[in-house]
Image (cartoon, rainbow, N blue to C red; front, side, top):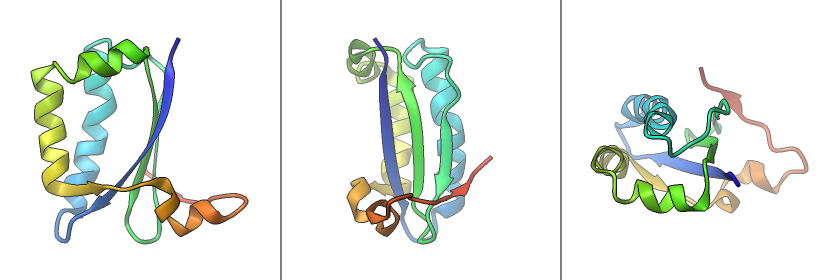
Length: 105
């Protein structure tokens, strides 16, 4: 059974463009490894620049597998240099009845 996740990445100062590139790489890499299913993900940006990504892992076990994949780990290390992972409830939009974000390609 798939596991849908919503991730929020707040870019570190000067890393906004880099973060957008990393997010564009993320789901295709997970899918190429069979870790995420073929569902199209969704990427969006909050007014403060935080990027929100929604995608579906293939399974709970796939999440664990990702932690042993060197290419996924390398990508996640680049994420760590470019952004902070933040809880959704820190985004003001998430306190609204209908949270609105700008779509990303």
